[in-house]
Length: 285
Ligand code: PMP
Image 1: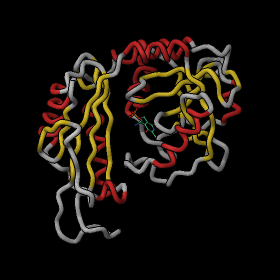
Image 2: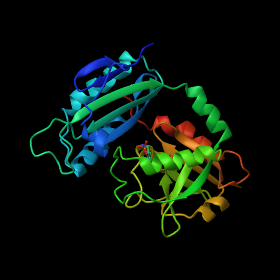
Image 3: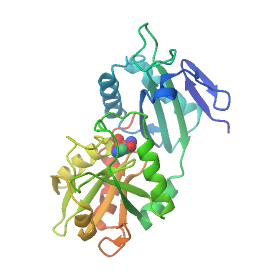
């Protein structure tokens, strides 16, 4: 089936859809994005994703391209037209098209909006989760504003490629103080021997993941202990369990860090349970 994209007001065949070559998203990575999970043809945690999108836009002084209610209709329509039951929807908003010049356009420009969706076989994720993934570490080399979900992802791209070339599923960035910040496209977590769940505070060094936020609710409901603090790769290697979270992966067990096995080198019990419980706490629209 041909895929359909929404591009600046039109639903178009993906192969024919295009944006202007002077789009600032293309030339300066001057834009932001969101990825939502689609499950049973419903969008997961849409409200939280839109709140974060609006925050990212505000931080970059890009206008919201349309009313939230309209954006919701567009996103749902792209999911529907692509007949996605399980998969992801991608939404990108850039500052718009203008003659190339670093500073913001001085004349009013409309933000560019692109929405795409694709199916992902849920069995694939389950199979990966049953095996767990390895992670490698990489020096943190991103700008300090990683709280903004910008499309400027070159360090993340290079880190993920390094992981792939080393047979790992994710790369964890390690800051100058020796602490893990987050993965190239995920938040990072460990579980201590006494079942405390540790993840870095969203105040510095990470994107405030939506999956992370919902998982914190899951932990509270299950009366599990959460500690929001940084941890080192050495602590992770000694941990009982580790896992990563992202909308496209939910809770993904981590079984090794830089080839050092975590726990018994198999997906942990806690990660498995959290993965199973997650959607009971998520919003579906
Ligand atoms: N950190 C980074 C750098 C990411 O790219 C992502 C995925 N968008 C996440 C964390 C996880 O965020 P979320 O749970 O909102 O998908």
